[in-house]
Each structure stands twice: as C-alpha cells, then as structure tokens.
Amino acid sequence: MNIKHISFLAAPLAALSLTLSVSGQAQNLVPNPSFEQVSEDAKEKDIKSFGLINVFSEEWGGATEVAPDLFMEREKESKVTIPCNDYGYQDPADGVFYAGFRAYSKSPKLKRSYLQVQLTEKLDENQMYCVSFDLSLADLSRYAVPDIGAILSDRKIERGGTAPIVQKPDVQHKSNKSMVYMDGWETVCGTFTGTGEEEYLVIGCFGGDASIEEEKVARSTAHRDCFTGKPQQPQAYYYVENVKVEAIEALSQCKCGAADERDMDLVYGSTSNLPEDASAQEIIRDAAIYYAFLKRMPTTPGKNTIAQIAKLMKEDASLNLEIVGHCDDDEFNEGKINVRYKGVGKKRAGQVKRLLEAEGISADRITVTGRENSDPASTRDSEIARAQNRRVTFSVN
Image (cartoon, rainbow, N blue to C red; front, side, top):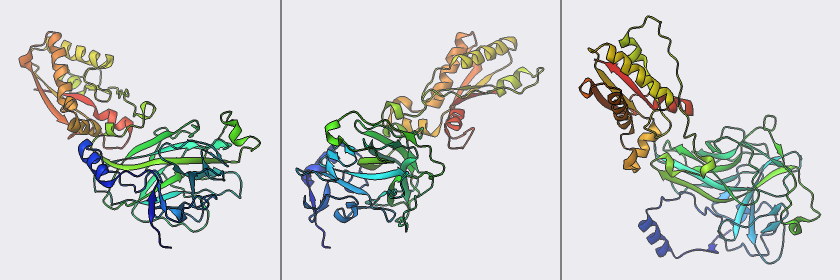
C-alpha cells in the first residue's frame, strides 16, 4: 500500500520548529503521539471497525496478532466514532483521534491488545527520560486493572498468537493501582534511563491472567444517551492519547500530577546497636540525621540527635566535629536545573552546624563537608534506599 499521511490538526512545520526552539521544550521521540496523522486511505467511511490502527497509521501497530483500535470523530456513527462508540463515551484530549487497547478480558472471544511504535531515534545511554501517556477507562468496561504501563525495547515485539505479554513494565503508575478513571483522562508517567539500545515503545497491560487483581466497576451513569441499552462488557478497555518519551535532567520534570508525585515526605528511621558503655566518639560516629526529599531542616528525631551530640561535646571539650552532608541521586539532579537545590547535602550539614551553635557549641570546633551523592549508604533502586542516602553523618577529630 502506498501510504501518504494527512494531519487533521497539523501546524506548519516552520511555526512548530520556532515554537520548540523558543520554548526549549523537550523533543518527543514518539512519532504521531496523538494519532492525528493517518494514511490517505483513511476515508471516513473506512474507519468504522475495530483493529484498524495498523492499517491506517504507518507508525503505530500491535505487538501480538490482536490489533489495537483507532477512534475518530465523524458525522456518521460507527463502532469506533468519537465521542460515542461501542465501548463508551470519551471526548479526545487532543485533536480528533485517539487509540484504544484491551487490557484484560474474561471472555475467550475478547483478547488483549497492545500499542507499539518505533521511536524516532534510539534512547541515549545513561540519559533519563520521562515516559507518559493519557489513559481513560471505557464506560462499558466491567473491570479495571493494574499492571498497565509501558515497556521500552531494543527490538520490535512481534508475538505470534493472542497470549498476553507478561513482564514487569518499565513505566507504570507509582502505586500500580487499578486504573478506574473514565470521566476524562488520567496521565500515567514515570522515568526510564536508556541503555543506548531501546527504540520501541509498547503500551498495554503486562500482568498475567492468573495473578492480575481485577476490580469490578459500577456501570457509568454519565452520557446515558450514548450507550442506552448496551450492557457492560466482560473486559477492561482503555482509550489512549498524548504518548511521550522526552529526555529530562531531573525527576521534577516528569510529574503526572499531585497524586503521582514520589513520596516526598519519606524519612528514613534507624536504630543504634551500640553497647550501653559506648564512648562519646563511638556514639557520634554512629549518629545520622535523615531527611525528606529536598528538605534541609531536620525532623524531630534529627533535632534530638543534635541535642545529644551537643551534650557530649559540652562534656568533653576536646571533641571537634566534622559534619558531612549527603543527598540522593534525584536531589543531585534537581540541583542541576534549580540553583536552590544545588549542594543540598552541604546545605544540610551547614544547617546542623547552626543548630549546634545555637546549643552553645563554638563554631571553631565544627567543620562542614558536602559529599552530595558520591558516598551513598545504599545503591538499591527503591524509595527506602534513596531515603537512606538523604542524610548527615559525623566524624570526630
């Protein structure tokens, strides 16, 4: 098929390039991210059935033998019109098209589908990317499911048959909740660090049929005139819009919204295993103060530690202290784009020094060092590990 593309809401190329260069907006590596560009063969009379996205879009297709769907605004209603179609009612988030995939089904006749696209270029090694897409549960879905996300692959996935793809997604909602929102669009996003090989993106549900925890959904009461008389279907079906893969420098540049931000207030808690007869030097070297993300003021346990160290230094005037400030990798990256957070580890140590001075400890007995993210307490990729790295430690001279 000789395919030529038409864009229903395309801006002039020169104007688009100017906008990007002026705003500094990150380049989206996903071609046709809102499914607006379709082949010249995509006449209104042709887009009226399911499974046609790989027919009318040169970029997008499936990953199994079950093709995903393309929905379009058109005057004459069909199974795949926008906003009212056989699966429910949804206005587009952008333009006059969106895509859809079946995430889960309890009917042997309704198989899962996946959306797949080749990126405009391979991901760069050790570069952080924000991967995101807008999602909406179709009104007539009887179920909603977790395990929806995206995987980045170094090759095109072409699974024979109709079996689901079962693996841990590279990007998904931070709590891996059941995606139940159907009265608009909810953004799913997360970060991914490239290896230099990835060039395909796949969106779908990656949980196994036997282990997935589906959630039964009440029938929607909105837009009743759209699907009056139509029953709920034994599936979880989702509409998709605005797919993006963009290079970023810091975690704060990849926010889905307030509900999806990382656990900003998590503070690591530790206990001491020192014997009761430990010396003042041993107690101080064992001490640590832990922080919430990007915070510099100690919490109550941290202030108690400072008071204990001040007491020991008052009791032994020969003790001199080095305060060492640390941060996690994400905080270090934040400092690259926001001067307010640059050197946050050393700033934490400086704040502890001021609090010790307020306790009556002379400033000439205290030195401050910032090691930032160069000396992590843990190298594991978890929220707890990152919280463990957000700390101030002490050395006795």
